[in-house]
Length: 382
Image 1: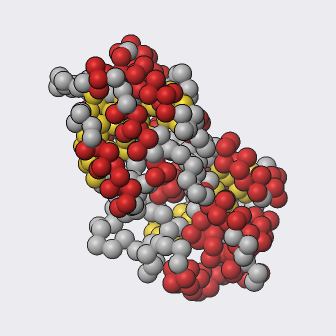
Image 2: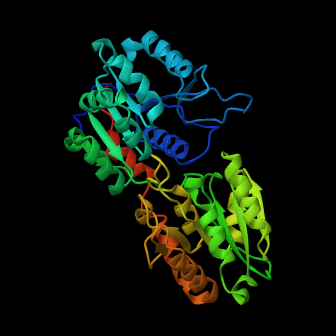
Image 3: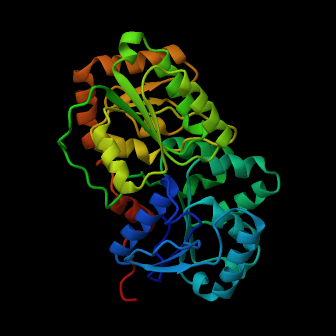
């Protein structure tokens, strides 16, 4: 149930995940800030240091904090100092914590009434729920933070259920704020493409075991020879696990089709990659206490008309509609994954049908709708 409307028009969004950081949570935070400002709220974003990266022109106020945006003690202490210095402003306004970094700091300060804002809104994405719950020191603090919150959102039903399983006290405060395409995301409906000798299968995501690139690569290598002769595989994303990257390189060396490691790629370049690709694959898996809560890249691929191959884990089934925008297979089922790739590679009509449905599906939700769910219209007369 949405919280009562606050009397102030100010929303403070406090985050460690913001430009120039990239990824699903950073995109979510930026887009919610834009949409909330567009509703008429006075938004101020507190974000981590941007280093030497030039600051874009934002439609809201931004305050860069002298911290890197990690979860270590130094970042938490510096954020706590700034929260203390501006506690009087925060106490009478709406404070929004869209990710776990600032939640940890608020957990430590919340025992003091002076640090409880008029309205506190939280968003959970997935993995942090498990990490908070399985830490015996953090778990009771997280429960108190949830009890102190006015409203809590998740992007998917999967994350909602995960949160309720571990923190049932959130139930009366829950709303859903689905992910959407970036507001600056431009897609050419039918881009002109140069003829290609092979179908391009593309993965976009950091090089990490949870993103499942190795599962995709092994399945492609296991395809029949006549099918392998029709493909090449591209991976775009920064390397966050060198050992995993080394395993990928070793597996790629045994392949008899082209494989490209494209590294970290700008948003503009990514759009070009989507337009050149024929199939999008990201076979995420549950890894330790890390889960795939949604996956905005699936929407990006669908917006470009790409059929998707993915594992049916976490919230992926809410980003990829099985049999309509892509093919979902169980994790750890290599034959099913091989069969899914074979079906798409061998059927141009199936690729076209799934891709066309994906274009409309990717636009079904908007950030404006999610911002309205979180905050509603600003109060009049302030």
